[in-house]
Length: 386
Image (cartoon, rainbow, N blue to C red):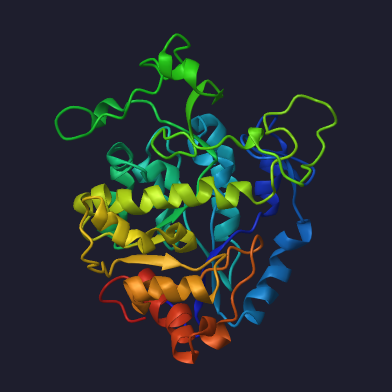
């Protein structure tokens, strides 16, 4: 159910148990105090005040919405960790999110090394709004084959999928024998032996960086190379690491690099992969793409020029949320897809919401559609009053 005051479908709130679980780790993703260490990104200092639940609740109300959906920070790569490492982090996230109370709701998360649809069902039974998956997991047909049990469950429950940027270097998952051959699609060779252990003699393993013994594809875009942030130079100095070895890039990476390059590339890949592979597999699934899918829908003319179908048929079950963009980008997306599939999202505390009372510069009616009417259609089961 969606209340009359509207919804912010995209926020992050690191609760006490989740922070404690990250601090217990000795390799990325991990927290050292409030300094976050990730593979492929510079260390970054977090503001603990920004993750105070009471303060955030006050901000939600000040934003003029009644409900904010919290989600796991998928760039951390928790979903890709071995099950024994992912489990305590996922449990801390889910247990705390379920107990936050108004004005918060939350998206469920799921481990990807071993698909656990019954475990997801248990979490959805707790009242989670749907499932968030990293864009890196849904970048091609193999990804949709691997995640099919999770997506099929959402479809059966009539609950939505939220696609969010994933880690800068997302591990390719091992082959799943249950999805190969008849009735499934085998995942590409990842440099992993059948038991999931890295095969260091494979060409794939030798050619790519790795972490935790996994083969990595830069930016998670199906193995397409992207500029390595460690080679860039910019007037930005990352947090000093005290001269100790660290899995993060060397200093000199711009603070905006991950958000502007790999995250946007991931969302582009996920947008087109859904239309090519996801929608045929899951015709009734509702899906929402973070950050306007990196403006991928604006490339429909190029799609036509390169052999795709440029007719611009709008899929009413595919939504975009607005985080980090302003009136010009929102207006451009509306011109391509129409206003009915654009929903309000802020990505707090990493970005600020737009001025919803002014309709993103498009008028009061547009603001009401983005924060009230459209999220209601995304989040409410068909046949249920909103």
